[in-house]
Length: 222
Image (cartoon, rainbow, N blue to C red; front, side, top):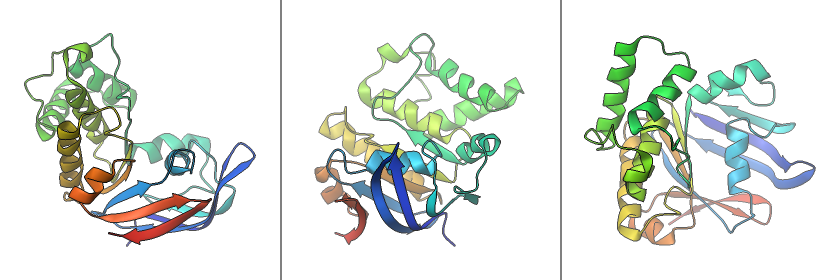
């Protein structure tokens, strides 16, 4: 059964049609690259998936939510089923790693401090940062900051990880570590979609590829 399914989906940025007739099916545990030149709609498609761009034409079902029919109060519940990893990390610079993660849990309804601490320890362990929880973001390398970003994406045990250029600000060795980590996460049964320009990583770790090109999403296999 698919965790993401779109049928004849049109994606708009304001009034501009960015992608048309998008037909995608992605299953739990799949690792998928989303590639294409800048401006071809990769980020717009991801934004549509987490309901940052409304769907008015075609069909899209993500983690059990119908994006065409979703109402505003349902969007936070959709986003709890999604983990989003950003190119620029988007960590809060005024607090340490643990407080960054605690902020997300508290803002998504966690109240029990013991459960919060346990969850933070669990996700930091998964990304290999259990000893760095009291470091401030500026004290971490770019790769470590992105690992915190991935830990943050895992906090609410999502069914899908959407990673938008997660290696864009990293050196090649660190990029490799991040892609390997995301592949490992997919093996736990989560669907992982990585929007990227990093063709070296794609050739090193081949997997299913979706290509945004001339307003379409094409299927390609290396």
